[in-house]
Length: 313
Image (cartoon, rainbow, N blue to C red):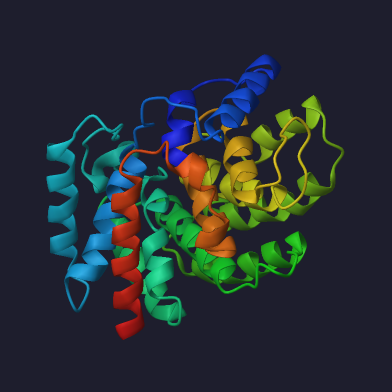
């Protein structure tokens, strides 16, 4: 849902007037009699589909098969908003890609390995390295995977303590960052530093200056470290009311808020939505909004297959 609904705003700077328009548009989409063309999914869902298929089709992880699925999906529909086709190890002057392409597709791994944390991390790392080789790209995907996994294991009947949620993420990502083969201190602590800022931002008075601070501190770009922490922030922020976003549905509030931050809206909304969906469960998904998303029924079938395979493993 996140990339379908966020895609039209990708790369935009969202003004106060735009936020009013987005609010009205979401309101319209929730009305049963509102008709509009399907909102097309982007590379986020396209690659996530391949990861889910990779997990369900074979008894054990086959990363060559995953690579083939990625290639087949790309050539079948290359206009889904994919990044430039440069080999992972050659990007960013040979340091490897640190974009959010690994993180945006990783949710199925967290769901499939819900009862095997260490194996989840191992598979998530390999799934990411098919296209992203830089520690920031890999660790961002691992952080997103951990966030989805952590949310999945929580009881949605209980309210979330944002500081505790972030502290648990920090504890887990610290181990991963310290194990990274990276000499630059900034890279080693990048995600810990961003996660440490989230509770302060959540507790600050909400105004236009705070919104600027959120974008400055967390980011809204295509780099993993400029978007994964932002997605986590959106998930936590949407657990309560947000000024200028009028809805009682937490998932809608998450997606709508992620979109109003502008920038890489489809991917940030996709990642934030994945965390929120894992926390709330299927029953809390807004079916009317879902009906406007391209191939929604096909995604449900794929998700059911992933669930059944996970139960058997």
